[in-house]
Length: 159
Length: 232
Image 1 (spheres, rainbow over the protein chains, first blue to last red):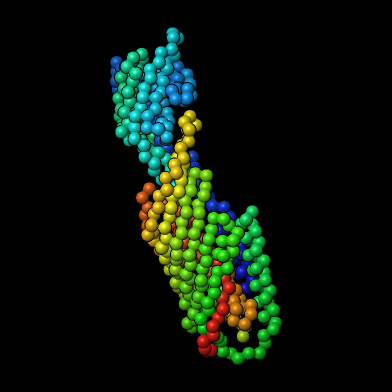
Image 2 (image 1 turned 30 degrees about the horizontal axis):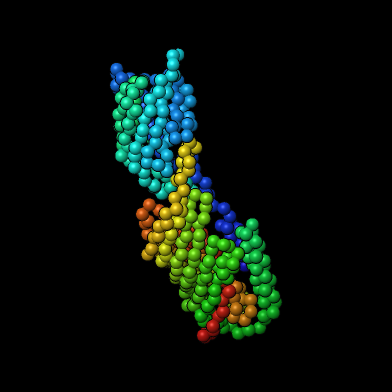
């Protein structure tokens, strides 16, 4: 009897000394949110309008986030290490591609998630400024200055 | 690997205990019906051992119990622990002291002259500790921008936690008045200090916390000496 119970105890120790399950950051856990941008019709501002052949490129390192996609909404990352970032939005129809540069300014804050994911960054006081050329994006509207989640659009471009 | 060696050690020690116990059974035969009452004092030997074997842990624990009735013992443990949490994306360290107080119930009917125990116990645990967040990285799914690692140490002092725990274990008298005890503990947190934009990763006495539940687990392996005070 004594030994049986002791065996159980030893078995329990074996289990508790093993690995723990919360070592891996789950994909379902909301971490650093992306900036959600929707594209609306300049002539009919409440209507979404698809951008043909949209490419979005980070100016700082010339990497494409969106590559020649036809879409009316995108989600792009903001750096977790800088308060400012510039993107180039390129529209390529049958004719020559046209592009507009937009600079995003914001205030960053680090928020604890859990031990596996550690921290995420959220952004407040978002502002967006174009390069002034308005080659195809005629107007921008900030819907939500705070980027804490990805449930709705933070920014709308009118084209 | 280190865990494996630790375990192997405990398992071997456990068998030593078991054999020592069976020898005792053969050796003792004719004794008075009275059993010993007294104060049993000892130390958890698994904690100093872990301190030696594991780089990220230092700790010790003093254990004591006092026999109240035939089956009931008042029991307490006092200890101090330091634990580092050095993961790729989060570096933190916790240190502090704890005390646990409660009762043990011996469910084992000893043969005459034997003083072994299969016991269940209840404890109330309390810890006073501090935690330091040393460095962390920002979790993001993007691969476009360079990852951010922040080395901005923050210290959280004067933290407390309370919990209850269920203990199950065995005690064996290996030599006259010298006991070896092995036990497992299931803990449930009652309350803990809330941290500003961080969490208690570890609580001394409670062990690792869990992001998704209030439960914790632990074990003990202690050696203790009974100071016999009277017989009943």
